[in-house]
Image (cartoon, rainbow, N blue to C red; front, side):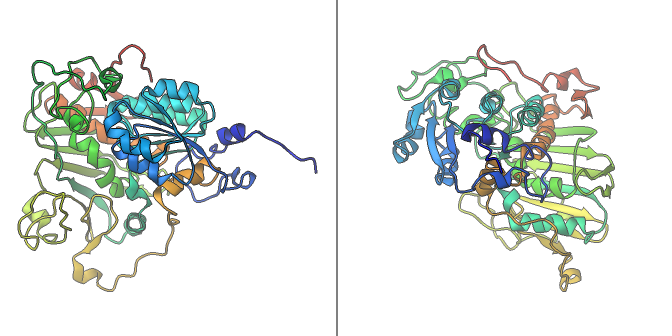
Length: 463
């Protein structure tokens, strides 16, 4: 047989052709063409903070380039990988590092789409932290570009790889708790300032921070010290973050969204502590209404579902939570819950069916309880139907090398993020009930909410 040759770069650009569809168990047609032991050349954008652990998780590959606008926040990562070339501007890194096969984006939310889309358009496989994007429109664009460029993708909602979450999907899809028409998800976030106005004045910019690059596509504003914005409190500011909802729902709502094959809600309505133009509210309660639908993966028929999100100390009613008190895990980083035997867990997911309930007491869906406990004491569950994960980051690296797509590839992750961020439209429009046309990416009833579907970008940044 005539020996077929191909360059390493050309091969890797094509290896993810099967990776843009919904996650399936079949192996990629490219998987036999390349040894899984060949290393990827990886660049990391936002290598401090969460990006540090993301970098460490793929350190079995070649860490070729590291980018961060905050040298102090990234200094430990720079020390750990001395052979990687260092950058401040992700645009320069992507333009100069021709050998990159794959890129990780772990910046604040507002930079995810500009950096991620540029990387994908250059043919790089992409791992992007949650929430996938800062706006609803950006989520749609990330999915479109991933399809167009046929790159392997994954969002950083690590719970998707948990055996508990996958088993929970199998149990719910089997009909164990009957027809499901109600879901409640809550979070202990925010654990950063929200419901505040922009501070007046400005402070000297520290020498280790490039403030202009940190702002990136966001409107210009003066730098303020005291951790007002960075390295962490940006999450509460609308120009940079997506509040408690954007931060945690890609984790906590992942199990029901995946299991019930949710797609576009028809309406979203929020109530909150009050909203200003600068930051997300101190607390919110948001109701999403999903229509009856046919499952995009299984083809199953599902009834309409009401999905309710709570943050800032808000919880489902006592009647709904009476059976789950004391089931949560206390963690040092959580706010004090009082007596753990009588308190509702600080975060959780409660799925209500016609025959019972499923409760997951953590942020990642890694464990769950079927209720009432006595009725499920001898329950064995359905046969395994979803292959188990080799590990969250291993899924992505495998996909980059031509293996199966990661379960949280952008075809799924963009839809999850797009849906979740719709909650912020209603919050920012002062609780207007938003009527949503998902296929056409359009608010049909409220100009107040419609303005937040897409944002403007500073010169030099595009999606």
